[in-house]
Image 1 (cartoon, helix red, strand yellow):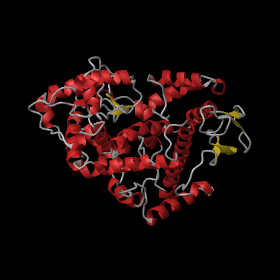
Image 2 (spheres, one colour):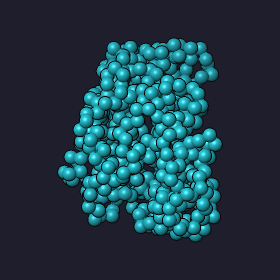
Image 3 (cartoon, helix red, strand yellow):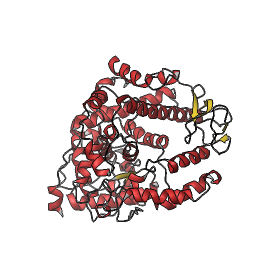
Image 4 (cartoon, helix red, strand yellow):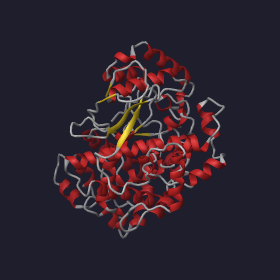
Length: 494
C-alpha cells in the first residue's frame, strides 16, 4: 500500500501562491463581515444583518449567473450524455473565455456541478477561480476588495443587459441595512412576479430572509393553483411543480446519480431513466396539498439519500465558521507563511491519497491547514475532478459540513492514526497553549493526538505558523469527507 501511495502524483495540486491568495480572499470575506456588522459579532441583530446580507448577495449571484449565460449566448449542447457534455467544454468557446477572464467574483463563486450540468452552462463551472487576479485586487493592509474599473464595468455591462432593477445595478454596497433592501419575488412555476417590494426582514420576522417568511401575493398575473400566502415551503412547492413539469433534469440528479463522477461500479446506470422515475413518483401526489415536510420526505424517498437540499445561503453561512477560524489564527502575518503553506500542501497531498483509496470507507477529518489547501484545490473544479478521477477510486470526493462535533472528534482520532501508520509522521504537530492544556485532560480524544511528542522521523519541522495561539493543525470543524460508497445512499463508517 505504501508503494501505491508513493506513486500517486496530483497533476493540479495548488501552488503556495494560489493557497496564499485564497487565504487572502478568506480574510477579505472576514473583513467584509466586520464592515457589514460594524464589528459586532455577538448580538442577535448583527447575526441577522449578516444573514440578510448573505441572502441578498446570493440572490445577486444567481442574477449574475443567469445574466452571464444570456450575455454569452452560447449554443445549446447537442449532446445529452453527461460525460460527453462535460468533455465537450474543454475551453473551446473563445468568446466565453474572454468574458470570463475579464471578470472577478462579486461575492462567492460556488460552482455546483449538478446545477451547471442541468442548466447546460458547464463552461462556467469548469473555469478556475482567478485567485492571482483576486489577490491583486485585495488591499494588503485593510483587505478590502478593490478591483480595477475594467472589471467593474464588465460586470455592470452584463447585469444591465439582463435587468433594470436599480439595486441590482449596484456593484458594491457602501453601507447596508437589513431593513432597506426590498426585492421582487417571482413564482417559480410561471415566472410571473407575485410580490413586489418584499422586505428581507422586518419587526415581525416575516421577511424573505426570515425562516418565518410570510407575505401575501400583491402583484402579477400568476394563475397557478397554489396558496395566496407565500412562505418558504410554498415557494418550494411551486419550484417542485416547475421541476416536475420541466423537460430539464431534476435538481440533484447529477449529484446523486451521476454516471461520470460517482462510484466507478455505477457508471452503467442511466440518470435520464432515474429522472423520469422520480418525476412520475412525485407527480403521483397532489403537489398543492403537500406540506414542506411531505415534500422533503417524498424527494428523500425517491433519491434514497439524506435530506435533499442544496441551499446556497446555508452553504455560505456554514463557510463562515471556516473563515472565522482562518482569520482568528491570522496565518497571513506569520513570518514563516510560505514555508508553512508549502508544508501544508505536502500534508494535503498525503491526505488526498488517503481519501481516494478505494478500500477506505471511513469518514476522514482534515486539520485546518489541510482543509485550506483542499478548499483551494476545489476552486478549480475541472482540475479537482481530473485529479479525483485519476485515482484508484475514480470518483469525485465531496464534503459534508453538517457532521456533529462529537463524531468529528472520534473520526479525527482515527484519521490521525491512519495518517501516522501510512506516512510515519504525526498528523497534528502543534505546541500552542490549547494543546498544552489539552494534554492534561485524559478524557479528551483530541488531546491524545495533539499531546504526542514529535517522532524522530518527522520531517515537518515546527515553525511560527504552527505555534499560534490556536494552531493550524487543529481539527477543522468546518468539513469532513464523504467517501463514495457502492450504494446510492452514502454511509460513512467510523
